Amino acid sequence: MTQLPSALVSLRDVTKVFPNGVTALAGFDLDIVAGEFVSLLGPSGCGKSTVLRLIAGLAQPTEGSIAWPGSTGDDHRGEIGFVFQDPTLMPWSSTADNVWLPLRLRGVSRRDARDRIAESLALVGLSDFAKAYPRELSGGMRMRVSIARALSLRPRLLLMDEPFAALDEIARFRLNDDLLRLQAELRCTIVFVTHSVYESAYLSSRIAIMSGRPGRIVAEIRGERPGERPKDFRTSARFAELSGRISQILLQQTPEERP
Amino acid sequence: MTAAAPGPTRRQGDPLKIVLPLVVFAAAIAAWEAVVRIEGIPPYILPAPSLIARTLVTDWPLLSASLLTTLETTITGLVLAVCGGVLLAVLLSLSKVVEYSLYPFAVVLQVTPVIAVAPLLLIYMPQDVAVLACAWLVAFFPVLSNTMLGLQSVDRNLMELFELYGAPASRSAAARFGARLKALWYLRRPAALPAFLAGLRIAGGLSLIGAVVAEMAAGSAGAGSGLAYRIIESQYRLNIPRLFAALVLLALTGIGLFLILAWLNHILLRRWHESALAPDI
Image 1: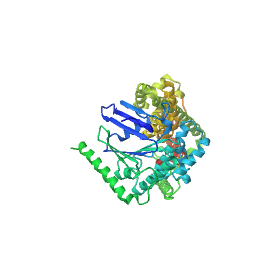
Image 2: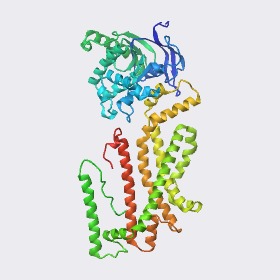
Image 3: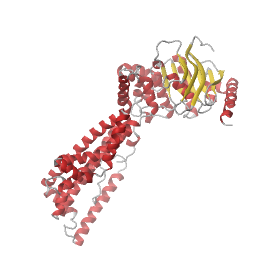
């Protein structure tokens, strides 16, 4: 595989061995092109989250390289927003202060950050809850705050680690739509880890399916183009066909795990 | 302690919660008074509550001076314990080397019963300092261990987020230390607050106990004017009403300390911490 010129991040032959001897990834290749919505899908424990952590620079690969062809410098953390499975908000801070955190850590005062905080909260539809504390919000709203926080630095790349796994279906559907709208508005690139076939089929412009541990990409499926989906997309034949194909490939990966 | 604690005074919500303990308390006092009068129990065996109240008034100059001494020891001990405990907890959380080398000594200090240490302290130090050292010694550990627990209880994901957004680009030792201080201030300090306050509540009661224990150990040795010394003195003189009066003052001091610290806890945590929502005073 040659490096695509437009790749935002490119992972080449990445191997990650944890200190306890477990090999999480082996021979992992992935190019992320600007503007894409890539879903990483795979059996549990296949190293999906590890991929995100490697891209974010929170962990270093044992072997292989992670390159940012389009940008200079070594420090790409300012271009990355990270959303965890839990909202991981600071319970002692108001919504606005939680969104402020990444800017605050970069030395931006509360007053200078005010507009940016308001913008970010407006993006996720929480303008009225700036003064609320996380405890006072529902699970879906907390996740929105978490997304607003990740967006406060206007990242080029948004990394999301099973962000909606703990939410009920209604909240998840709504957040899925909002996420697609946000991507269209902000023109950012999203790498989305999930274990839901349907979520990946709905959201992604590309679905990368991983093998069981040690994880590598076994198949890539082209999804719908980035952008908002028509209202009846969830019941369309295209969606059913996409979900079917993803499920099939995913099922072929699981027997290797449990013989 | 024989005298039951009066019900907490400031508590919104169910009035029964205030009224019921007050009624029970008043009933217990009335029963006590009645038994003493009907049975004609002499005051050197069991003084009536009315006599204790009268003693409180007549002996007030003496008792208030003792109360002040004990209060001063307790509060100074508590303040010093908070300063030392928090400072050490921060140092321990910043460096594993410091933690491994110092923490065991803190545990040894804690598990050695203070009453056994008090005589030794009285030999080495002037009496007021020894009493203060005792109060400090018992109050120090809960502050230290709770603050340490709190400092370590930051959400792991939040620390990663911090690393992603806040860690310096350079990998020099100074930059790493700076990042640790930043994490301490932005994440660990607020996350540690609930555990610290829980430790403070325990330490408040313990520092009073430490002061009393030390006064008792010192009291038999001679001069001293704290409430615990008054109790020992009254016991020798068979002045049982004064003994009870001093005991009442000690109980009130403990209750007062507890209420103040619980109130502090409520004020600081009411907006965000679950513990401050449940009425648990």
